[in-house]
Image 1 (cartoon, one colour):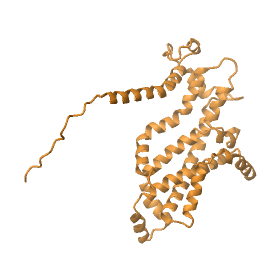
Image 2 (cartoon, one colour):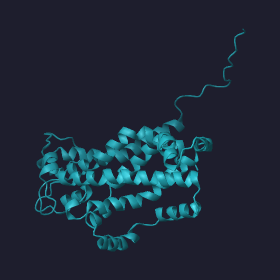
Image 3 (cartoon, helix red, strand yellow):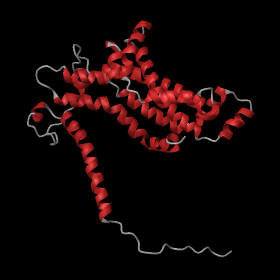
Image 4 (cartoon, helix red, strand yellow):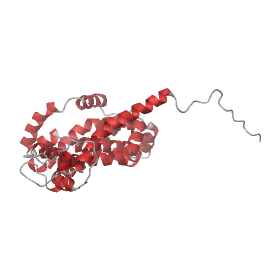
Length: 297
């Protein structure tokens, strides 16, 4: 057997460092600094005692770092009339987040599957209506929903805010899963039908295991959106179930006397920790999931 000759590319070898590449690196560095500088200022300020903050050197590292502002933000900062810290809001946000994410993804994946494989009567019209709703500002729906929820007796409750997040997350989740399922081979669906599998059997045993990348994308989007929500939690959750973002606003805006900037910064970082952790833990799968099907269909 004769060896296969490998042809080397002709021409000059590209230079590693060109003016264009230097410009790209400079742009990326400036962009990174632009977005990281506020985080740096918040972090160093949260570790400084008030005596150092009064000096006005916001970019300086703390001379005597302390975790006291973090402890106070978590357990003793005043959110209006109560001084329980932001931990109460964290517990409320978890109670709202978990069932909202599970319900919105479960319903959205099921409707996306039905619209892509079963072609129910009026599927195109229903899908179009969902997409229109996805781009309508939800402030338009707030007053009617408040009236409906008050009539049903679920306003100002965990059930009410979970239902709201499920409803508003449904169009986006349907779009994601409908496009992803539409990119899968129809032969898989037909083979399962030949074997006698029904609607839910095909969904649970065939389609859902193949949709892992899209499930991760959906979890990231929903966790970020629901955790960062402010207005829906303020209106529908009720005074006893206010999420962490509303508690943060109360800490920052209800301070009397000297404003404790270090406590405010610590409370802000604590509020953002969950979305940051989700992004850092699953960012690679997010890109993979988007590339796998979010832009197809």
